[in-house]
Image 1 (cartoon, rainbow, N blue to C red):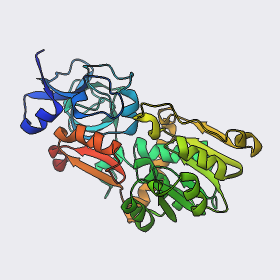
Image 2 (image 1 turned 90 degrees about the horizontal axis):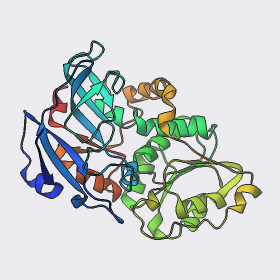
Image 3 (image 1 turned 180 degrees about the horizontal axis):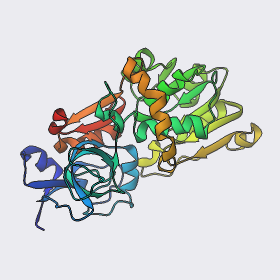
Length: 352
């Protein structure tokens, strides 16, 4: 099968609508520090053909996530299609369980078309008044991460005071909305921009959000929560984690979700200076992978879909139009340019 490689920057200047070919995004080199468009290439090839027991999917929405940056350091193979969550429409099927026209979720993401088996694809439900993109944000892995973190890992209870780092991201906004619906006491967040802090307090439900560039995290958190916190939802690590350990009350809980602060770092990882507090205050810190909790998916639907349909909860999404923007969307997310979950949308999504 012939393939044409096109660096990301050049591709964005020349992309045209294609019907007989498919595009994938490959990682071409390992970044040292922050990645650039030159670490990626768009690859054009013949349209894949489904074989017995498979189906061809035309992708409509793609997810770009912080964990992709971590995987670029060694988990992703070079010069091969990148993995990622996606929603697509079955356009040619050789399996009775994958009907043509059906909308499915899969993880073979950074490509316009892909061939999947029944085991690789999950039919997603359609909920009246809820956009399909929600299945990559608050109804998808992003929302499920927040929900599992609160209900299964933290054992969250109404009235508890919660601190969330990277509060303006996909998981951070979902965590804020869920915690507010579940009866959180004081809800505090951190973000890197003042305008994001304002959005979170005015629209998402946070009581107070600080810009971590405006001082040390320890000082800012103490000012926002002078009486301490019960739970820390950690998307960042580093200085944020250290500050939270100091602010947590006795028997407090830390849910480790990610370590964004280290993903693009080339220096020595941040060394926590207050680890003895974990013992002295009987704190518990636990991490998890959302893929190990698929049984919670239906519970998440039951919890949040009625609030989406009533309008009590709105989607926190930043949408990038066109597959050609997927690399820039990913890099923009790493720079913190998104509000909520960043999603890439195909023009064909408008017809579904």
